[in-house]
Every structure is written in C-alpha cells, then in structure tokens.
Image (cartoon, rainbow, N blue to C red):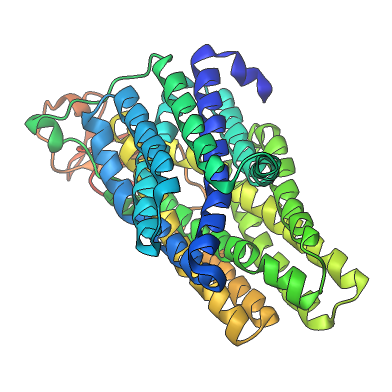
Length: 448
C-alpha cells in the first residue's frame, strides 16, 4: 500500500491531506475550549449547534463544489479553499461571541466542503491504475483514523506551552502548508464548461438518482452514519456515566474504534484485489447492526469488567465494518461516472453522506438522553440494518462492467452507434455503462 507514495504528485497531495487534517484536528480541540471559555456549562449546547452548522455546510455547499470543479482550475480551487480555511483559523482567536463561533464554523466547513470533493476527484486522475487507486483510498482512510487519534495528543502537548488560542495558529499553519504542497503539484485542469458543455455534463445528484449502485452507496452511508453516530456522540456518556470510568478511558474506547478501522484499511487493498466491491461492502454493512446489537445487550447487562471488554470489542467491530464500507466507496464512484462528471459525483456523495450524519447525530444523542443507552444502540442498529437491507435490494447482484442496451433516441450514423447493430426498435450494443448525455437512465437487459 505504501508503494503508491512513489508517485511524486500523489505523495505531495497525500502530505497536503495529512497536514490539513492535523490542522483540522487542532481546530476541533481549540473550538471546544473556546466554546467553554465563552459559554461555560453551556459549551455542550454551543458545540452541538456548531456540529449541526458543520453538517448543514457540508450538505448545501458540496453540490456547488462539483459545479465549481468544472469551471475553476483544480489547483486554484484547492489552494483557494486552503487559504480561506487558514484565514478563518487566524480570525478565531478574536471571537468573543457565540454567534461568531457559528459564523466561523460555517465559513471553515464550507471551504472544507469545496476542498474535500475536489481533492477526492483528482486522485483517480493521478492514479488511473485500479490497484494503485485502491491503495490510495486505503491510505486516505488511514489518514482520517490517525488524525482522530493523533490530533488530540498533539493538541495536549501544545497546550503545555501555549494557550488554546495558540492552537488556532497551528491550524492556520497546517492549511497554509497544505496550500503550498498543492501549489507544487501539476494537477489535471478543470473542464471548461461553455454553453455546449452544460448540456453534456451530468449533475452528481442525477447520477445518484439514476445509478442503482450509487443509490445503494447512499444506503450504505446511512448504515455507517447510524453506527458511527452512536460511537461519536455517546462514547463519553457510555464511559463516564454507564461504566463510571475516568476520562482517560474515553480515549481508550475511541482508540478501539479507530484501531478496528485502521486494521481494516491496511488489509483492504489485498482483499479488494480478489473480491468485488459489492462482495466486501454488503457483508460489512450487515456487521454494523450486529455490532450495535451486541453493544445494546452489553449496555443493558451491567457494568462489570466483561461488559467493558465487550463494549471495546463492539466499538472495534463498528470501526472495522465502517472502514470496509467507506474505503471502497471511491472505487464505486469512479466506476459509476464519466471522467468529466467525477467532481460532481464526489461532491454529491460528500453532501448526501453528511446528510445521513445530520440525521443520525441528533437521533443518537436524543435517544441516549431520553430512553437510555441500550435503546440508543438498539435503534441505531435498526437504522443500520435498514440501510444494509436497502443496499442489497438496490445493488444488482451481477452488476457487470459491460451492459448491453438499446438506443432509440439517437439517429442512424451517430458516432456513438459505430459498433451498434440495428434491431426492430433501435440500435443495440454493449460497453462500460454510466449515466451521461447519451445514457439518461439505467437500461433494462436487451433480449437477444
């Protein structure tokens, strides 16, 4: 997997991703401390609202990022987003009101909603070979997991020598370093979309509506969000209020989740070399409700040592299953969109997946507070099961690369019909099928 870093352009972009993630992690810790500084005991409400603002920014801005990616050179787009994020980080130490926290979070996450899908869409163009792209996806997943583990420790070390305001300086440095690394790479240019191209390009949302495997991918995102929300929202409550363990145990529980995800990310390139995405992702999705069901039983059973160990196993299983679902998602997107539409596809997936989190975050929190942790885990498991079952029903079992289909709307002699043969109702041929200007809907099999 590490061998993919021998490509200089990808190596620099991956490093840019790492330093930007480190900056984001420092900002997360600093924002929590800033919220406490401004609101005291009400910091939880402030952070909860800020998290909702973050999700709203992701859901609403990401589709626009797909449009921008067709019009603006990729390097300009990525560097511009990094500079906006650095500017917001520099401004954060001067925030004195809670509403200003919400505004800066909105600006920071809107820039991230532009950066992330554009970054994801560049990678398959730099690494067209399937094996290398799979390795890059696993490395990216690993980077996110490491950020969740390393950033709090880095923030803790920095806080021994600077105030939490100094963390925002570290955030700005991370984003500026990311911008510098992006500038050092020659990236594929944006598709210049004039009037003639607007009719040819396909929106990301339309791709998801029309492509069965992408609708299944959205269902899988819901399953992951249901399980992940239980971990992210309720781990501190599980550890401190249910098991009555010290604060350090929260880190251990989150580390178990991260370890499961990282181990899976390391193993996936070899697994995906032998198995299809569908064969890997669907069973993993069913592992999520199983793990949540085990967590619900454990939380209802008591607070003994075995229950704590079982909870850590459940959290690790959720991390592993979630990674097995999320990591191949880029391959599914790449397979399901024409090159010109890849930025729109990644932007739509970014937006829709975060819409799932926008639903499951408050659900997990409200259920835990109102009905108890076992009920929260059980209901989250039901939501995850619904997502997994929907994915099985939506994703065709065969799902071949080449689909034989019939055109009834193209005239005789059209270039796209060069290899087609006429029949009683149109022209039939087969090729790698994606939704584009010539293929507006998913075909039914052609009867020979």
